[in-house]
Structures are given as structure tokens and as C-alpha cells.
Image 1 (cartoon, helix red, strand yellow):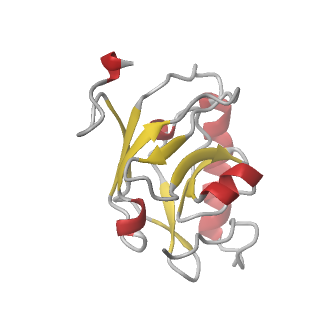
Image 2: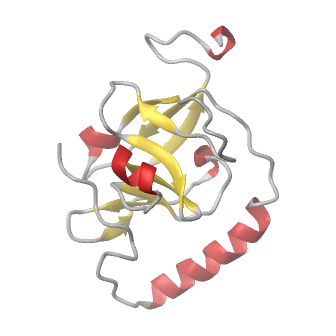
Length: 153
């Protein structure tokens, strides 16, 4: 499996006007979204990734709560692919990065939200840099094949 990308801070950055605008938009969004209560979702579906599509597209299952304010999900196929909240945003990464809380991975949310399915703007690692991908969707699901429904818990 390919390694996840470095965190945005670790990756080489090129300052552009769009990056400044994105940060300003994120700052405004974080003010409004941080007050929303977090809601638990047993299953998450990620679709639309292209560069790391086969690695990250798929279904994710809520893992046991480790006392965090945010949920953590593992890809349902058992691969070392996780959806977790780190450094103020959501990342799709591997277990080592999730455990270290260092950020980085194949995807990250541009918005600072309490739930990954509330983030509408995601960036994807191309192998060289992070780029916005408007086709990525992250949705809460009531059930997925092989795991029953949310009422079964």
C-alpha cells in the first residue's frame, strides 16, 4: 500500500492567493461550526477520491470511543486506513499518523467541523502536493453490507 502523504505543514507550500482565501474561509467556518454539537455516526462512506481512490474510497466503521471529542473510523475492509480528527481537521491516514496525532494522509478536510460528513471541501494528496477535489463526498450511513444497521448497536 502506498504511504500517506506528509501533513500540509510538512509538504512544500507555495503561497498563492487562493490559499490565503481558503484559510480566511476556513477561519470563518471554524467559528460557526465549532458550536455545533457532535453527533455519532456508526458508518461513513467516502467516494470520489481519484489519486488515492482505491485506497480511500469505501466504507468506514466507527471504532470504540477513546475518550476523544471526535469519532475515529477504520475502513471496513480492515486495511490500515483511518478517518480521524487531527490538528483541527479530518484526515484519511494510516494508524501510525492517527496515533501520533501528527496529521497528514491521503485526504484532509478544508473545514474545521465536528463531524467528517459536515465537511464539504476536501483536499487530496497527488503524490506531489495537496489539491482540492470537489468530487469527494463523505456521508453518514445508517448501514453498510456485512455490518447490519445502526440499530444493531
